[in-house]
Image (cartoon, helix red, strand yellow):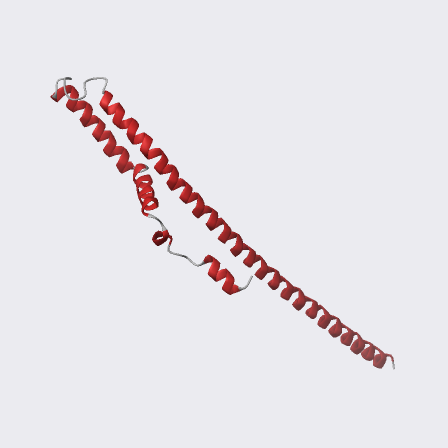
Length: 152
């Protein structure tokens, strides 16, 4: 794999511009539905609903005590929110798969580079070893010459 191919593969593309309107809405709903802002605001809404029906309207309001209308609203929200969150999770899964594929190619390229460096190091070490052997042979010859001169 060449450097150009790798760069083309891992270049950051603008996925936001490629998403459809429905995908963008699903991502926003999933993001908001899983936030503390949603949880706290929904708890406030539920508290106000119950408080209004029990105390202000003396439990004779538009949704008396077992709060059937509130249950219906909660069920509808859950029924709509669940598939929207699943769509967003599926998109995130696709992104994760794509990211994993890109990581694999980057790791593959890094492995190729490491192998190339290892081959270069092996070549350098082999060359150094040969040079050291030649140097040692010349030193042995010099020592033999010195020994022969000392013996005379």
